[in-house]
Length: 454
Image 1 (spheres, helix red, strand yellow):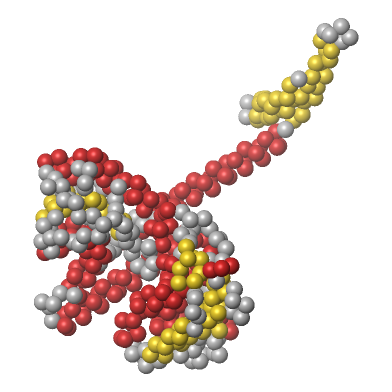
Image 2 (cartoon, rainbow, N blue to C red):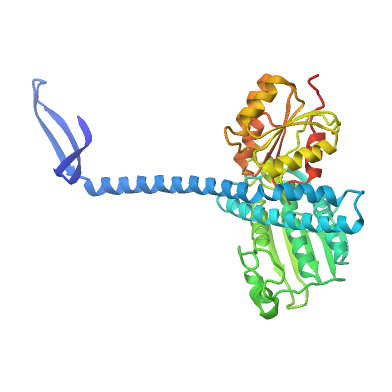
């Protein structure tokens, strides 16, 4: 028997396909007396299959191209912000400067942070909608997560003289979730409340338990500009903003891209929860209610993935993935090999680390870093990932062979989940996504195991 498909040429420029099936006819004496079969023209079907495969390949290629573009976009947008944020964050807390000057630098720092947040929002929206973000879920306390989110907006509350009332009514507010992603969701709502509430207004935060005990409710209310029914209907749509953003003299008065609430809804949905917005109308304030499955009945909506411990750390600003090893403090005098091809960042980091009494050697390429590491021992490698001659992952893995006790911090404009996975695999203890503050870098150094090579 046979069942085959083969290509034929009807003419020089018109190929075709044929499917043929057949079997032998056996006579009474067991010998083959003939064959019977059928041949069918399957050109149309085959062409459809080829077109479908081509479409699949093109879609995969487009997806890869989009990933590459987002990674490159993130890198190119973040990198020039890095020296600005490093210098501003250092100067903003420098006691040698006058309060007025420190306040000016704090203003710069806040605006660079805002720029980084907008970049994060764009990337988060893309990652979530394409199913690239999973949750690292465990039992977490909604109250503790809310308190962390509130801590992030306290300076803004003070600046606008907003009154905050907090009422945690639930004794056990445990849920199954990703604490950092939940904090991001709460922070987005709180940030909106601060933004849209006039000076001297009020923000209320409370937790409640559903009557049947199956769900935890988080309610965040404000006395701000409120929402119309129309605005409530599109509140959670990406790139959608309220009527205030385009009305008369208030053109884009409050800024932003209209992504925070869309991202919040996606994150809440991933947790098996729901979010709704209510308002009595313009200038009547707004209320956002998030309800999440209580821990006892929560269902895991997405498998845990090591990449997401890193990805989650993007909220609410640039990511720091702690080493998790012994905490020993950022002991001055430790020998740092700094590898960075962006000259302004390299110069800024060398200066700031030197001011903190570290012994810093600098390299602008992996090749130069390898030469330095061959001649002398280092305690810490701080390296960019996108180097001109080799990537930082390869450099870290290579230097760990030369100097096994070398601790590494990746400092990069690349912050996709796969980038953080590669950092861990290469031996980096932390992956800091640019732009970073000097405090973030100090914390990452302090979290390294203090095991000098000498």
